[in-house]
Length: 105
Image (cartoon, rainbow, N blue to C red; front, side, top):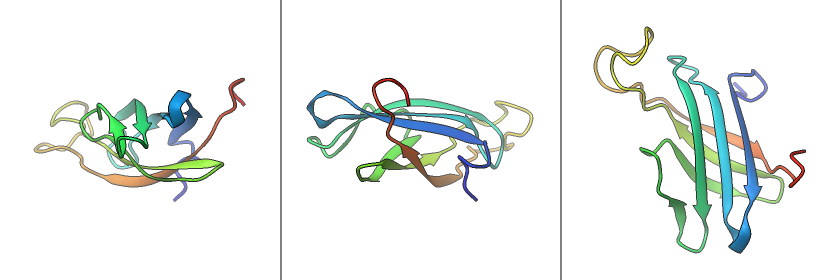
């Protein structure tokens, strides 16, 4: 399933100074429908992410047009009606997001 085409998730990547990439992923978990909204900084010089938010978004690879992430839902038990009764949802999936130009296109 292509989560971007299905409209479940949205995402974009932007180049920042010093070869840093900033990604934003938002939408709903395809398993439990929990709201996901993560802004993440990826620094290739340090080998990965800066201050990862509970492991929700991780860099897998990148090329010139897209940035590939692994996204994981980390909603706590009872956080919303569809949340699992015990433990976190835990579903993870790859998401390929486009690089946006500075003007947002």
